[in-house]
Amino acid sequence: MVSRGEGFRWQIRPHPREGTFEQWVTNRFGKRLFSIFFKTYTEKVWGIPCSELRAEWVAQRIKDLSLKTVLVSMFLKPKRTIKTLVEEFDYPRLGPGMMWQAVAAEIAEKGGKVRLDSDVVRILRTGNRVDAVVIAQDGREEEIPGSDFISSMPVSELVLKLSPPAPPEVVDAARRLTYRDFLTVFL
Image (tube, rainbow, N blue to C red; front, top):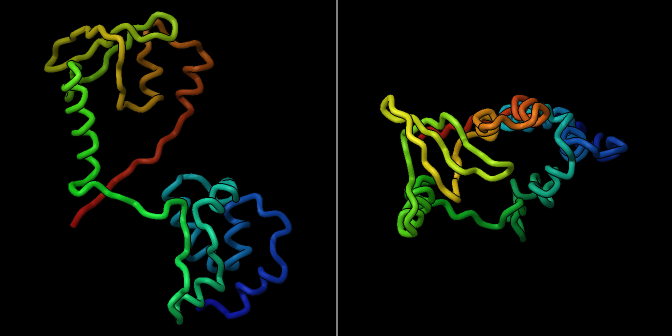
């Protein structure tokens, strides 16, 4: 159970500087509520310690949220809703795959080709321009020339497949990139 004074202590003596997510949330909800409700979830989702996430980032995603607003909304119907970064969210009726199906249909309609179930072996380039992509499918390699390409692979993999190779500092930066896996389970 959270003591009544816990959140209010941070209202009276807040962090003097709100530079991080942790400081921003603690100043509004107290250290205990931060630890229970915000810290673990946020760090699991974003893969970054709350002490490294910038306060500006959370302030723009959770507008007008405070301990007072939460408490009032528990007992009374709020006069206005708590705003987040977006006012409303439209989700594709049959899931996000609908968007990629629409993109593939438009590419095909304009004479392009979408290659699925293929591994990119090399991305052939001249300077900053991609000239062709070498793919492997069913054990065979095929070179596909073109003027426009859309990649769905992680940038870190794309950089490593460039031929000729990217400069060493670019390859090094690509190897240091990290990504969060996104997994959706429907029951």
